[in-house]
Length: 361
Image (cartoon, rainbow, N blue to C red):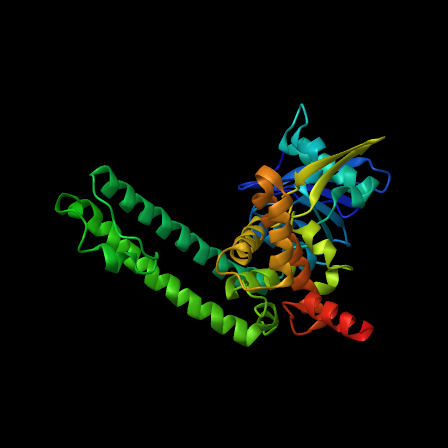
């Protein structure tokens, strides 16, 4: 097998298993006969050398770390790229004789037989990916700060003392003078790192605010929903990217993995948990918003009232189910507002009910 082989021009369908060092390639002709099997280095230059100047090919790859840039590069070269959903391709991941070479051939044969079996996904554009990276980097800094705050509290608690309750933003200021003397050599660098992280997070917050004002004014509409902040609004816009992709707002909940799975056969129709098939980052943000909406500081709204009713009749896991349901309906509301551009009315149902009573009277 050659290290830098070329792709035959007569190939009609290509399956490519992406890797960190090499991409394994299988080419099928119009009659589904394998006419080439090779590998290329996992670099943009090698991809250009192998695919540039060839007639338009259908290339099937699996979604993963390298799939965004590989798909963009191949499409720029004039090829049609299908990015398969790994959750739907269990025949590849659970193959008894799984290998990179066989994975590439299976991708090619699935694409050749019926591309819909790949359940192709849509990668974001380069700009959306770059802007979303800002959100993910901020999230990583926040998680790191939380880890260090918990570390400091744990060490002090183990010594028999306690640190005062405060926000993560003010932690380094509030606890610096109350740390036990014996633990100051250990926690001094930790507090300095927390202070530095807080400043960097604040700087990224300003960067995100400017980004929303300049490039994503639609986030202002989404933020009119009480409980939806600038981070969630921007993540929602960057994840969906094009609201017209969804024929119905309800489809957004399915796309984000907030809709229940289904296992129906005959008279059996089981109630299952949500699929968790969509974007983990945005789903976590929506769940956080739902917790706030149902919490003590949540403003009165139709969504809050509906969620509290679910809590009341939900039994042992009522709160957990209500939070998920509110997050699901919140995603639907946000998409509907984005498409329509209407002003959000938190108590719209109550207003309509009162108007209906007035007309009857």
